[in-house]
Image (tube, rainbow, N blue to C red):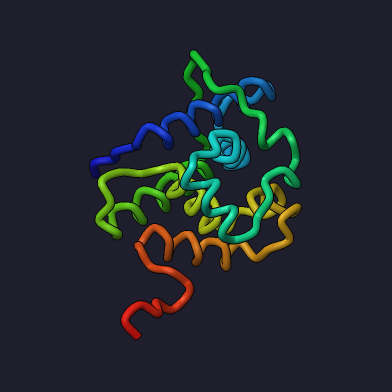
Length: 150
């Protein structure tokens, strides 16, 4: 299986490793990936947050202040591998060129891991609903009907 991580996903995972190291952990866990994605805050992620009226500033600061670089190497936990598998599978099913940080976020939401839901408690939203919106966005669909030409 070929895995093509695009730059923003690589940067988010590098931030995840930095958070894990800063916390004294010896492996990257899903909550570290969440911190990496939130801290990377790509324009696509920010646009998604705006569209869904989600304010990252209400989430724990530790999830939003991941250092941008980490020079070492940390393995991924089994749960993190599940997140990455969901992200890669989704990107491939949609025919996308590679995995972005939005795919990583979708992988987190679709993983069913309690630590992800706990990290997003400040948003008080259903992670499945957010995942569906991201899924639609990544597929090029919108949640609102297209009224052009109607």
